[in-house]
Image 1 (cartoon, rainbow, N blue to C red):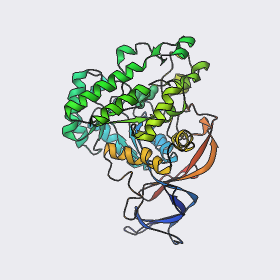
Image 2 (image 1 turned 30 degrees about the horizontal axis):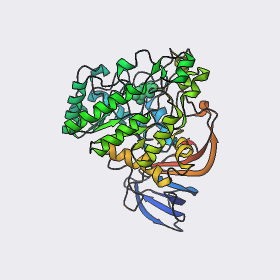
Image 3 (image 1 turned 180 degrees about the horizontal axis):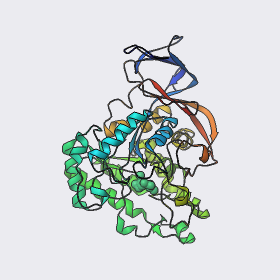
Image 4 (image 1 turned 90 degrees about the horizontal axis):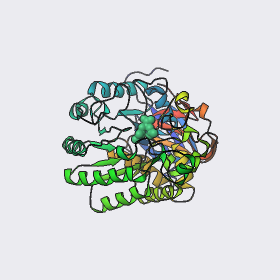
Length: 437
Ligand SMILES: NC(=O)N[C@@H](CC(=O)O)C(=O)O
Ligand SMILES: [Zn+2]
Ligand SMILES: [Zn+2]
């Protein structure tokens, strides 16, 4: 049906419990905003049956790799957007380590426009901190922030901004521009040749170790640099119990530091490396069970602010090879909610309101997205996710929307499923199918 320009569109989401609390209600969305919340609502252009499920604000991923431009054989903005919508996301931040690197406004604006053209999720480009991720010269942060994409976050992710003077300057510029620097915390001198967590498992398997101190020494340094720059720093993919203690210390000092944890670092540990299957190879590496326990507690407590997927697609030939030669990274967008349900909701560490906090509200606030992570209330933008908390499903790597299949969760049966995702009042995914515009 074609609509006359200017005609309003309406969507009704029925039988949902807001944040999993209280009695089921219906939510009417008109022209992209929540217009009415009540019971017995009827009459709309389209109705989504919530089936008594949980209604949450749409998820926001601060850490996604979409591989476009350069490696469209492993993921594109289109296939990654589909994975995001199916995973319940309404906004993702696409890291800059593409080929070419997203270190100019031409590149970051292209990613933004392409994401909008696909229309399944808001794809916010992350700009590189240094030219070509080379770590020697600051990129033009201001030009990227001023472009159409309004770049809000900068990161050399994949590499650490290792030079302390350069990191200091980046934090100072970022403060002036009101943008965020996200750090891949890895002291490169401590990880030369490293491919696995340094511990008993790596020693037994003969894999060169990446010590916790490689992460923690940069987290400590950057906390102090952020303090003195009066700027904000965000720690990507926190992976150790020691990082949690440093974050706790820094926050207690009033330092503007935030951090994310990935679903895989919450669920998996380095005992999985015994098979030498490189699907388990990731940076930072899977740590020990004691780290998983500390990361879960920190996320529940708020010492770690949010969940980010670090969705990192790789081609089969880059994963199905000897462990040392394989690329690090794993898929995450379509499994994140279920892994959080398994690790945090099942044992009561987080309730659904807590899930809204760590997967939507906090990430939106950290990066400063005004229309995401908002309360589910009349007048607010309808960026929403309907979750069936009682569903279980078995992950099938080959059935994911991603162009790659490198998920460590393949064949696992996990709790909770995304039923529908709504972006500004438009259904982008429903019952496991994306809805192209
Ligand atoms: N996490 C990874 O192991 N890999 C990421 C880079 C990164 O996040 O550091 C990638 O781009 O593949
Ligand atoms: Zn990284
Ligand atoms: Zn990454």
